Image 1 (spheres, helix red, strand yellow):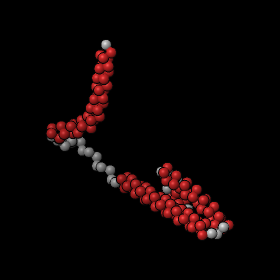
Image 2 (cartoon, one colour):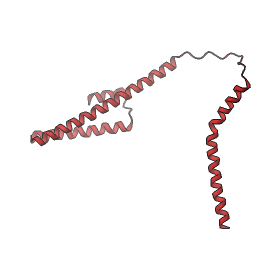
Image 3 (cartoon, rainbow, N blue to C red):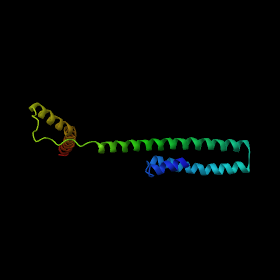
Image 4 (tube, rainbow, N blue to C red):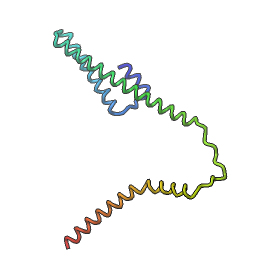
Amino acid sequence: MEKIEILLEKLDNRIPSSLAKRIDTLDDLQEKLEVSGEDYEKNPTNDNRDSYNEVIEYVEKMELGIIKDLEALLEKRKSEQLAKEQKANEPATPPASTEAPAETPQAKSEEKKEEKKDGSGVLTLVIGGVLLIASFGAINYFRKQ
C-alpha cells in the first residue's frame, strides 16, 4: 500500500474514478484481511488458515494490478509532459515572407473541396432529418382531412 501512496503522490492524486474505486475496494479488502487474520489467531484451524491465505493472495494480486495501472498512468503522463516540453522548445517557424508563393487555381479548388467535405456530411443528415419529419407531418395532416 505504501507504493500505491507514493505513486498517488507523484500523480497528484489525479486518477480516473475507476482506479479510485479499485483503491477503495483494496482498502476494504485489507480491513477484511485484518479481521480474517484475527479469526485465524483466535481459532487456528486448517479452514481458517486456507481462508486467510486466499484473502492474502487475492489482496496481493489486486494490489499488484493497481500498482501496474498507476505506473502505466504515470508513464503516460510523463510522456505527455515530455511531448509538451519538446513542442514548446521547438523553434518557432520563420516569419512568412511578404511574397506569397504563386498558387495554382487547381490547388485553390482542392482546398475549397476539402473545406466543403468537412461540413457537408453533417448538413446532409440534418436536412434529410428535417425533410423526413416534414414528410410525416404532411402525411398525417392530409390523412386527417
